[in-house]
Image 1 (cartoon, rainbow, N blue to C red):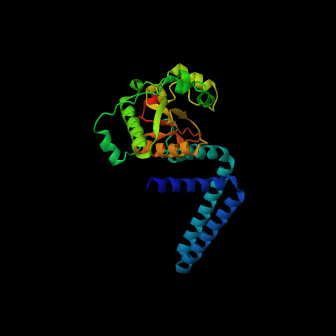
Image 2 (spheres, one colour):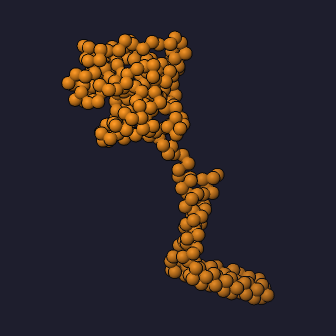
Image 3 (cartoon, rainbow, N blue to C red):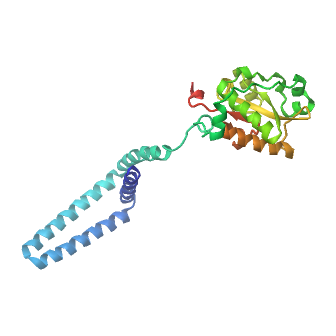
Length: 279
């Protein structure tokens, strides 16, 4: 009902603006009303002279009133047009924006969790896997892709417990169902490091301090282990298949996967808690 009312209000406003801006429109409307008045007058005169005279008088009065109104509109059309814009634009903007999430890139409701995943999350507490040796994160191949990875934090204890359990469940699914070993490249990220990465350019990140879920322990960047080495590559078919499986498992566990973003981040997953980034 609200939408219909807004539509009718908009149509009426457009009609008034047409009359204000186009003299030909006013003349056409005046002519149409005059013709209608004359037809009514003719019908009334056919019934009685008195009625005909009264109808003619009403027609003349209506025509005179219409002409006076048209003259007033012609003189005051800028003011009336401004008033119409002020009356119509705010409701229309409110209607258009009412269904949008203004900060969809940063904050939103968590996704529906698969029933099976929900059951697993209510069971035993999963333990963090043994981390790979530090040298795994500083090889020439890894440094070429992630040059500042040596100073990244990979401590599971600094992650939000709910997020950590979901991510551990994703790791378990990837290992047991798909045969992929995984490791965290970076979990919690300090505000200072976030600003340092943002200063490196948009190819690294667009988010500054406290614009990322990393600062709240609700995000992690992950990669695959193959033969004891990290594989961070979008050109490797094995890795790309793994990213697709990882994204599906992460979303089933109620996480947001970076592979669906405009600037795709296939190894990224985060737990979006409403209101976190607004604190």
